[in-house]
Length: 256
Image 1 (tube, rainbow, N blue to C red):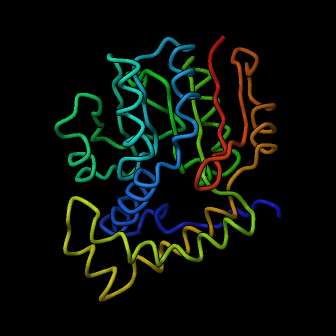
Image 2 (cartoon, rainbow, N blue to C red; image 1 turned 30 degrees about the vertical axis):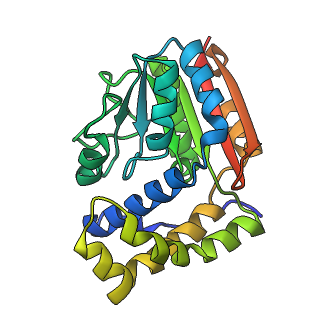
């Protein structure tokens, strides 16, 4: 199946911020509770070591991203590690909740564009479940900006354009209904727009299906990298790795 560049509600400028936050809160809760990125923990640790980094700059973090559960494990192996959460539409309430009482996480209040990361944000750049949002030209711009800034980068996705992934997305409204009471910080509006006015399950269903249909394959990621300027200044690793829940498609680029 070829990649289809449809829209997701959370990408739209006019989409209400509170609904976007409910969606990103759900995604971070589910991905961290299920530990879907646990299988790439060693790859992330290796990237930190090879790029000589003690800081991770997480781009497109949403409500906290896939690093919330990984951060503690990474910290055990690197006591100096810090993780900075950022987003084009920063979910400040979630950032504040998820970074309190921790010596690992901090966050940026300002909007951060993954295609043009400010120079003061240095470290291993990561994107969890977000690279598929970008058109090929913008996806290239993200990787090119990392090359031009000489910053290591890691891209991680947990779906693809396969029938099992699409079926999983069709079932996503059930996951929303089951997990919503446990998502923190608690918000009455989240309850209202999940159960009484079920907007959140509906838009999660749409965005989930679109996510599958526009996720880049390993072959497509290799093609994007092949067209980058100064790509040979980096070592690239692009693979699909199985985990308990399915798989992770990942790309890691590290300056030579």
